[in-house]
Image 1 (cartoon, rainbow, N blue to C red):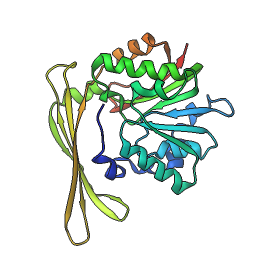
Image 2: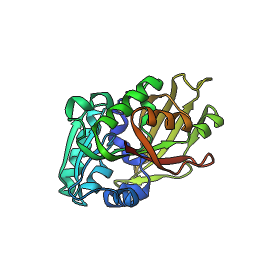
Image 3: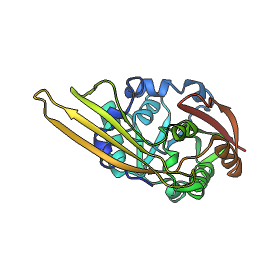
Image 4: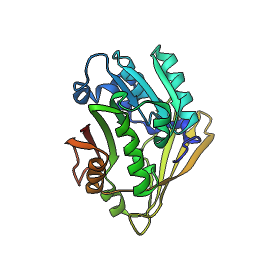
Length: 251
């Protein structure tokens, strides 16, 4: 599992304006949140810097936030304190989740932010999904977002430089993605992400990280969800769209 420790300190430059505010990020999931019972327990198992977890806690939901990166977990805890939100934070990767929580603990598990591709190959991905499934109560839901890797691979290796400055915390930055697309689906791919911050004097501070990933096809994800006891209930998959969301229920 990839660390994200270098990018964690500048991760807000990678979050869209619409999802930067915790309340707005949580509101983007209003449709699936309507599936929750009262007094729901929710796990955000790829919490990043905590915008979703804090937004959910602001709705009165009992939230636990986990991430494989210690720095991401720290930043989530800091954001929770800033907003006065009650969020329990735990450093854990997907396969470690059953070591921290009992089976059938949660009514909903979120795995968002295009994170599942960091699981190592099909075996690692199924293991991650199995851990999430174990923690769901019967009838509970997994909410997962993903890049459309069919499109990513079709574009090949490339350099993507943002066409505008992104302003966060009074500072501007240019975001650059370098995609290293392997010849075959099952091989390790790489994404290098750089955030180049520019201050008022024109000085540039660059933080970057090389991330490993193992892409998957949408139909593979469908099969793997079924394999771990989850039934696909909703999907926004469109082969021409860059991202999609699936909602699967625990059988």
